[in-house]
Length: 314
Image 1 (cartoon, helix red, strand yellow):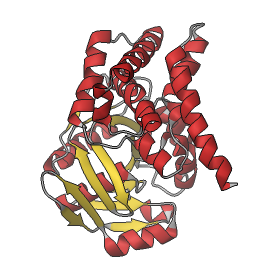
Image 2 (tube, one colour):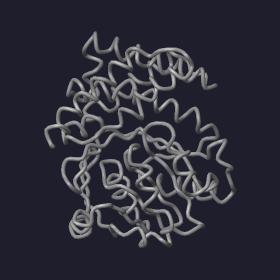
Image 3 (cartoon, helix red, strand yellow):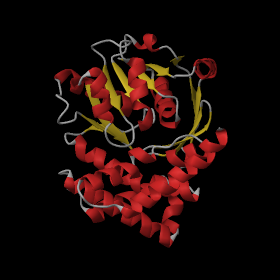
Image 4 (cartoon, helix red, strand yellow):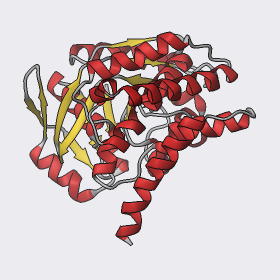
């Protein structure tokens, strides 16, 4: 099965390297020709407590090169989903399926607008990855990958078959993957984890594990999670608050040294996914006539960080 990983960020590089080492026919799609050329020539180095390794794969900046791909795995930022879809539209085969392993909600729907709902698959990952440099990534926390077909995405047998095949490949590559029936609940649980961790790490400039060592910060994390769980309830997703709080704490512990994707963005002075995470909770709460004050403050603070460096660029 030809697989294309879209996006050479931390997670994209991590997955592409593992798949290439496993022996899969994997390509990495970048939107920058210069970086694609660099990665094609140098490959990707993965550093981890389980041992470092180097992998080479085909890298391209030309969407047309993905024409024969059976499955594309989107690892771009949620705020770039529409741009990535626009580049792929008309370039990929009508038989290709797209799997989103992105943060936030709404990626399935945005991709469906371009390719039709029946071709879109959804998943989440709890692997922690930190991009150290171009083509050099640290596997900072080992987790799992959960995948499935969205209930409202007109699932077809071909999609599930590809997910089953991918699950075998990912497990063989050491990335622990499995299929789930209720992917909607899984997506919400991942949102809750990101809401509890990402903004706080970006604001404080600390690795994930530090959040548990600061009492006031741990309290803010709990309240942000509680607000997200309440919003989920309004959407028909019933999560157990104590279980979700413990899940977030568990991720902090298992990815203790990981630099969250949002903190990585802030350090590189890039636009973050705050609007698709904590900002989305605020937006959905307002839609139901309620508020999410802690998430509102966290969103405003991260936006302020962005404004500082984005303004200075001009």
